[in-house]
Amino acid sequence: MSNNRLVTPRKLSGFMELSPDKQVVFDDMIDKIKKVFKQNCFMPIDTPVLELSEILLAKSGGSIDKEVYYFKKGDTDICMRYDLTVPLARYVAMNSENLIFPFKRYQIGKVYRGERAQKGRFREFYQCDADIIGNETLPIPADAECINLIDKTFKELGIAHITHISNRNVLFGLCEALSYREKTTDILVILDKINKIGRDNAKDELLKLGVKEKDAATLIDITLKSGDFDKILSEVDSLTDNECFQKGISELKELSSLIKVMNIGNCVLDLGIIRGQNYYTGTVFEAVVPEHPEFGTVCGGGRYDNLAGYFTEKKLPGVGMSIGLTRLFDLLDNNDMLPKHPLSSTELAIIPLGDTLNKCFELCAFFKEAGIRCEVNYSERSFKAKLKEANKKEIPFILIVGEDEVAKAQFNLKNMTTGEQFTLSKEECLKKINATR
Image 1 (tube, helix red, strand yellow):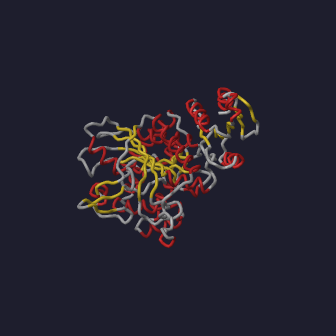
Image 2: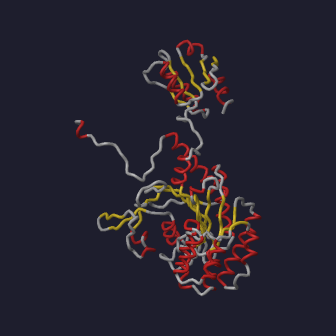
Image 3: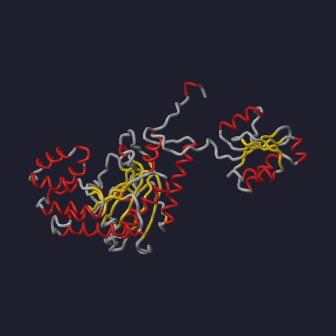
């Protein structure tokens, strides 16, 4: 092929692609998250990347959102999943007769959103979701389980975090008690951005909406309350006897008690946590990295009354949490917070000298059988070049196999970290390597 016909290699923006050493770290994070999910008795499912458009667009009334990847194959309208929640709803609706409730599932997979690619926002990214689905009812302990999952997951990842918790019924009920029921959605939109626009601007927007000045102050004051559960709940408990408000307070009190007995750490009550999605109906929570507030929310979730209402008449309430792993990884990477990892997973490189290649592969099989990640460097480069390669890849041990070594069954093992070199049998080499693992 002539050079003028070569295609310039490049990738689409908004799609993360990692070097092998960073991919190892990413995969390790997935393994740790899976470990926590499994330890807490969540079972895996894996739904297709492609769904029928009428399924994926059910909650939007069938209209195609500009962020959804949509195409036709023959007469079939198809969309790429943009989250893991709608596929879960479809899955539960299809299989509800065979599921045992409460159904505790986790799923880790890629989702796709055709939004404008920018810093921290990807078009293809991994989500790590865990949900508990009930049949008709789902007690508050399920909410505590998901909050516990956040705590244990971030501890396993070694990432300091604080989980901010609230209940949407508190602000819903307060708006209703103040006679702003019809304006509740617009009020919550303003209160949800109070940390960005500030108290005064939030007050001005509420006044423009028709909220009385005294009521605006009450709404802003409760939204800004954050800290100890018992202290805050005692301060707001008697604010109104509105049924919805008191339901939220009661649920938070029960949740607070469960958080204590389950020994869930790093939690605060933050009545300003609203979560913009309209399907949340009770408990809501967001995790942040306290030393890096610019990260924003690194994990979020909450309770929803009717997961599969678009697909079945059954009431299937649920609660779930989700980590946008690609975004989290990118934040950690850009702030030099990723654990360092060697450029190779190899523990032992065997270097042949002379006519010893067959013996090298025989030795390689021996070490692999013993659980050592081992490879033979059979390139035709010089011995010195092979040493440099092993050093660059941070391989901790090399085994030098020459014809004299084969004859004596004694091999030169070099510790690349300390520089020490030993002449040992293959069994002794194995013991020496294992002693450093």
